[in-house]
Amino acid sequence: MGNRKKESAEAMKAARKSQYFAKLRNVPTSPRKMRLVVDMIRGVEVYKALGILKFSNKEAARRVEKLLRSAVANWEQKNERKADAGELYVSTVFVDCAPMLKRLRPAPQGRGYRIRKRSNHVTIFVDSIDNKA
Image (tube, rainbow, N blue to C red; front, side, top):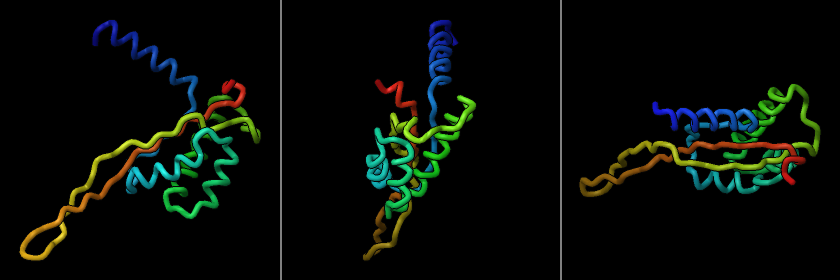
């Protein structure tokens, strides 16, 4: 690795130490369905977001709720104290596409219809509300 790449990689690594996040990879739901859930909690205070996810009737909300709890636990681990109510908010959330499973379904007259079983990756960043300003 060249010197320039090495320096930029170290800078990115140092910046990551001050960020608090959690990732969920290869979730077997379509990214579109997951984005509907994630859009509900973007920019919201953490405990309010947990309430929104708990009472949502979407299947993807259960996984996002568990992921958000993991991100809060990561924040608590790095800061060595418990998070108070109203202290954290969901700063960034994004859903990326993951590899697709491609299957064939039998169709009339000897044809086959392709079925794409989509999956996604979800990343949640939490931050302190005093850093928001």
